[in-house]
Length: 124
Ligand code: B12
Image (cartoon, rainbow, N blue to C red; front, side, top):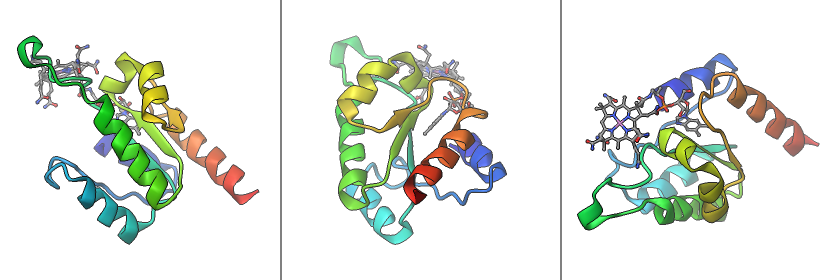
């Protein structure tokens, strides 16, 4: 998340973090942050697809979809998925989560161009 924020700052954007581990993995916490900060674009970093435990498997795709829905309901702004987990299975995650965009692999070149394009489309 820090490297994503640094790339955005270099491209002239303001960024705020919402770390769901720190905030107790609460979707209500995210909702409060969205209402307070009103971002124009939300990125979700997905590190793992699952808990890598065959005896008690838990996949995170459903939770990602809940986060995307929460952003769309609250603000209706575009949601971008990324991260090492996302890059392992991008097409299925993008479709199932209902996100607007996804970036596979390294972000440094692509995200500033994407945010500039979204800004241009929203202003038109
Ligand atoms: C380094 C690493 C570790 C290190 C982490 C050290 C640390 N202090 O962070 C160690 C060795 C501890 C580790 C442990 C584990 N790891 Co590991 N790890 C990696 C590895 C090789 C690189 C991750 C990384 O930090 N990359 C550097 C950062 C800068 O890159 P990044 O996070 O991907 O972010 C870039 C992009 O993804 C993008 N991006 C990121 N977020 C976002 C968000 C948006 C919106 C956008 C647009 C872009 C974007 O921008 C960034 C810059 O380009 C990945 C594989 C990989 N190649 O990604 C596996 C990986 C994440 N690990 C994996 C696993 C399974 C584990 C373990 C569970 C292994 C185990 N059985 O114990 C543990 C779990 C640890 C934990 N607490 O979760 C799997 C997850 C697979 C899955 N099924 O979900 C991966 C994907 C490897 C694999 N192919 O299997 N790991």
